[in-house]
Amino acid sequence: MAELDDYLDTSKTETERREAEEQRAQTQREQRAREEQRRRYGAQAGGEQTAVVIEQAYRYLGLNPYAPFAQVKAAYKKLLFTYHPDRNSSSPEALKKATETSTRINAAFQIIEAYEESKKSR
Image (cartoon, rainbow, N blue to C red; front, side, top):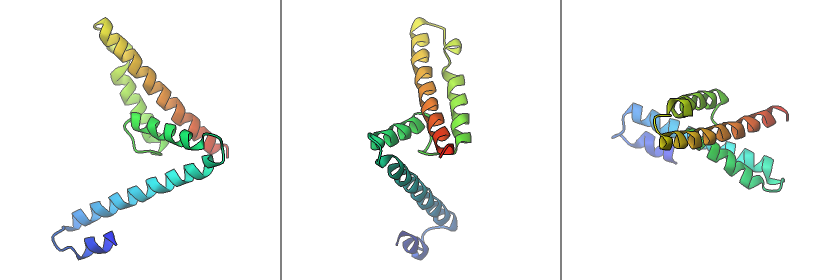
């Protein structure tokens, strides 16, 4: 119904209509990915929690859930370059914060990497 409303709304430009359509398509892809995860992990104990952890890992890297692995790798490298402890050793507080942040970045990447590997082995 939203597509029809956008089409009939003469106040929107073609670009705005295209952007709205792309946003709807992205939302549908994310919903399908979440449903697929729930279907796969639903039968396992803690399956819902696993899907939530995976989605949180993607978000921690600043990505939409279930983004392509190439994007994950690029975001991981960019964040780690910014927050690496060796680059932030100006003060003990900065070093501690950088160490904690880089540890979380590494953990998020490892979660996503394990998820991607498990997808390949199925």
